[in-house]
Figure (cartoon, helix red, strand yellow):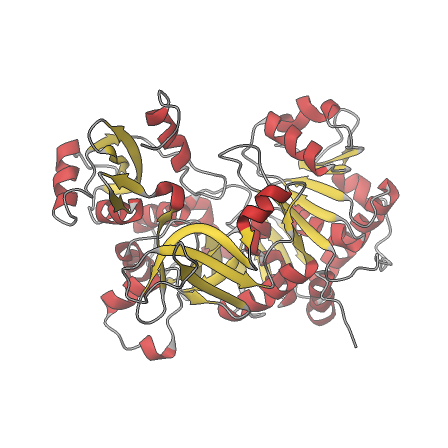
Length: 526
C-alpha cells in the first residue's frame, strides 16, 4: 500500500482531533481548528474559481497572520505551489520573483500592497491579486472574497508526494534570487524529524516570531498544526510585544534568529523574572558565543536550542540539544556544546569534508565544508540547472559552510566560505573574532568582515553596536580582543554603528557591510 506524504494531512489531523481547540490567536481574533479548516475550504474554492491548477504558483506577501498560515493549506488543496515572498524586498525584486516564478495569483497584506503596486502591470503571468484587507485598485478584499464561498469539505486535487509544494526564493545577495523547489515529501519528512527533536506536542503554544515566508517558517506551520498546538501570530518583531504575548498567552516555544533573541535579552531586565517559564527558544543563524547561551538560560530562564540548516534542505538538519550522556557536564561546557550546530537530526546524514571529499578528523581543529545527504534536499533551483549542479554533487548537497567536528561528533561552524578571512596566508574565522567581542559587556552586536590591506591582502575589521550607557573606544575593544585571541586574529580596526543591516529573518547581512569597504576594488578578496 502506498499512501502519499501530502502536507494537507497535517491540517486534517488537527481538525479531526483538535477541532474545538483554539488553533490561532491573531491579536483579538481567535479561531479553532474546525474554523481554520472551514476557512481553508473557502480559500481552496476561491483558488479553483481563479483557475489555479496542480503545479501553478501562488505567491504570498504577508507577515505572520491567520491569512498567511491558511494560505499554505488552501494552496495545497488545489495542488498549487506556495511561493512566499520576503517582506523586506524592493519592488524590482518582487517583479523579478513574480515573473520568474510565473505566479498566477498574488495574495498581499494591505500594509505591504504599496511595495508591489507599481510593478503589478509588468508581471505577465499574474492574473489575480487579492488583498488581505479592503478592496483596492479593483483588487478583491480577502475576507469578503473568501466569505463568498462554501465552508463544506473541498474535493482536493490528487497529489503525489513527489509533487512540488514550495518555491522559496533565496536572498539574492550575490545576484538574482534563486528559487528552491521542495516537494511535499521533503517538507513532510522534515516535519516528522523536526517535531521529534523539538519535542512538539499538543500542549505547546507557539509564538510565530520567525517569518513564515522564511523557509516556510522552518516548517512550523506543518508540525505545530499536525500536533494541534495553539499558534499565536506576530505581525512585527518588537521585543515588548513579544514579551507581552509570551505572558498573555502562556507561550511555550518560539523560533527566531539570534539578533531577535538579543533584542529580547535587552528588553527583559525591566520584566518580572517569572516571565515565560518553561519556554524553549529555537535558534538558527550565525553561531552564538557560549556567553550568549549562558545569558539566555540564566537570565531569561529559557531553554536554548541551536539548530542548523538552509533553505535548500527544508531547512533543519542538526540540533545541539544535549544527549543523555552529556547532562552531567559542567555548566560552562554545556553552554559551549549548545552553541554549536550539533549533530544530525533523524533522517539526515551530515558530515564535514575536505577538498578531496574525505571526512575531516574529529579533533575540533580540522576545517572542512558541511555536506548532507537527506530526503529533505531540494529538487533543484527553478530554471537554474547550472546552480543546481554546483550545489548538489555526487549525491551530496554542499552547504558552503565551513566547520570542525569535535571528538563527541558535534559540528561547529567556523564561517561561511565567503566569510573566512585570509590574512597573510592565515585563515581567520570571523565568527571566532565576533565571539571574543561579545564577551565584552558593552557590545550589543558585532559583525566582522575582511577589508583590503596593502601588506596582508586582507585583515579583520569589526562593526560594533554598543549597549546603551557604554562608552568604548576603538583601541579599547582591539586591546580586549587581543587578550583573548592571537594578535593576527584580532580586528585591526573597528567602526561603531547604531545598527547592523539585517535580513527580514534577523540575520546580519555581512555582504552589505563588506561592499562598503571593497567598493573601489574589482572583487571582494585579495
